[in-house]
Length: 347
Image (cartoon, rainbow, N blue to C red; front, side):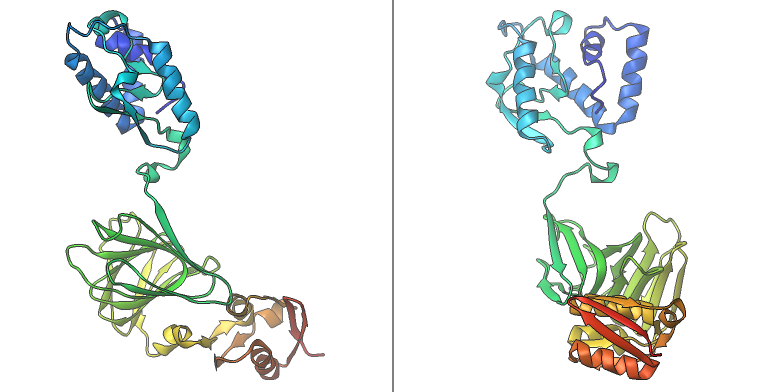
């Protein structure tokens, strides 16, 4: 809803006194936000509901002052209930009085009325329906396990976040993931479980699977250990790709999806059992992995050294032993100053 809209245009429209310019402005306002048509219809309905016996004067200044006060008290609110008595009714509504006070429209003639206060600029279009959001966080150097209301079990790797609305399980079962999570989903064909991660959507088909979507990655990986996952790009109309058990699906930065056999599933799930798998990644990427796992900042000196490939696996090893093993394997040295570790090629 636009704050710059002249709300008196609605009154003139309902009274049959709108000019061509008024009607053009009203049409543009209705086209700017689908909620505006609802406001206009509610205003029209209220006008029909008010009878000739309602002879109390309509004090629009008083009404607007009450609405403005509530907007100030609840700047993030979408709907604020008000008592009907706050807005006296009038029989001469259609010609001389105002039912629209700023961004407010009375929605009922008796009982409790609601005033819609949400403004378009308050949040992105896809978030117009405000819900209480739940967030589960696995901070650096820790993992977090959570059982959702539908019984689905989730393990979050270090540096990861899971978000979902308080209507989860009552209708859809959608979650948003930043980072990495292992999902053991309670399957329900009537209410699909979907993981949204960096523009991709993984939907379970009776499933245990890993989604890896850290921000530094060049794509999103989905590895299925049991069942299957339907994988597609968010908002895309293309046919989803089916990722079966023992396969890895990948959505690259362009949105293209590839599916291939994954012979080493433990590589993707070992972290849920306390392990660290660095197979095939660069030392630079390994530094990010170790930083999340141990809560430190690992710096790699030298671009060539940072691009060296790492092949190593650890299980419940302390950080110094991990760094020692990497130093021996790669011909490097490391030093530590508090939470900062510098790894460099040996002279």
